Image (cartoon, rainbow, N blue to C red; front, side, top):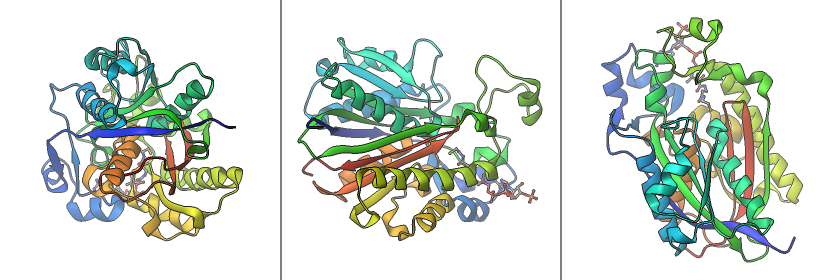
Length: 331
Ligand code: COA
């Protein structure tokens, strides 16, 4: 393949409001020590009740477009990954298209839960490789706070809100996305659910406030799946490309739990130093977590042109996937 697709610009945005473990102690039967030890999370960002998720998505998108050195008018397609859309219709992608003035862009949402950003960039790559589009904006835009039961300690301590975005386009051959892999197993889908237009009796029974359309999760099942699937996906993209872990500078996993990251490191036999974590300050921001981490890595100059990185996602669906990238931007 003589054409390569890579990230041309990246940006992110977080709500200002910080919710600490100590704040949560006042809301449910939990404590800072338990949350920190079991998850690695100290605090998370939360949108105000009246603020829609798309607002942070718009800011992240604008920053990514600026950093790519193009304008919104240049964008051909907007893909938003979200499992917490403000509306079922219009899609968050259409709302962001309107807000940033990307008047010639097509727009749609992708829902692959926490794997959404990996799915999004994989879809974007296909459109660019086929020659159909030149610039594709992928935004991970999430407001988990809006689908949480704040009286359920099993879930309310885990999640946060935020958005991260990337502009993808053609890059120097041999750089950018070297290999990407996405997968799903719908037969395991009931282990993490957020009801939409319909709820079954089983969904109702599982929730503390039965009729509330909030997130429910079998934490330990998802935990085991996450470690297994993430390690497999990372190994697969490396094997498929013919690269070893020694060639990789950083692994940027979906940020769900520090112990999941430790499990991935152990399974892959790599030092935890190689696994990038921002979980302590933002919690699990679903499909926004990978671009949020990537934006921080770029801003703090933790990678250079030519470094190999792997982003790896896992989550509801169940879905998982990984992308091996040779970083193509001089930082
Ligand atoms: N504060 C205090 N205690 C809590 C608690 C909280 N916030 N949440 C749960 N507990 C309690 C449980 O009630 C349980 O008590 P019991 O033993 O008396 O029944 C105990 O802590 C242990 O619960 P358990 O579920 O076994 O804990 P865990 O070590 O598996 O950690 C998760 C729970 C949710 C943190 C962990 O399973 C996880 O991170 N899973 C992955 C979830 C995820 O990120 N999914 C998103 C999709 S990617």
